[in-house]
Length: 120
Image (tube, rainbow, N blue to C red; front, top):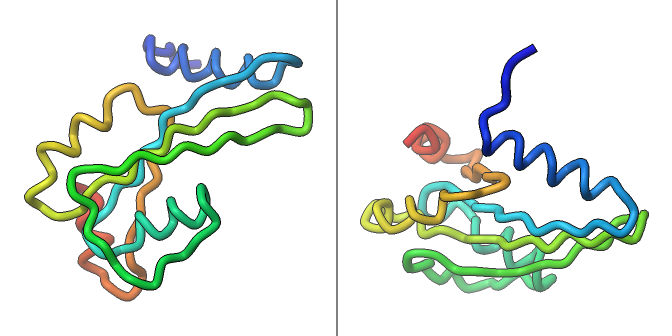
């Protein structure tokens, strides 16, 4: 059995609180991946139930929010950060990684290079 660092302990505490009646949580989620893999489309589809046909470059990052109500009545407020995938934004995007609860790694299955780029 390993030891938890402070960030892991905080994340575990959030999960335990969500399971209790009347406890709500706020989670920060970041979408990470190279340019053109569909991060913005995924975020907008999930948060706004839209799927834009035109592709717009995300400059730096974009913020979306979604409230999810669980079966036990608790609410999870998701703060979703859609990061810019172009290389010129990588230094700016790094600041979005602080205090995240989860990262969603997005890549294009038809472009092997986009999968390799996730390791960056």
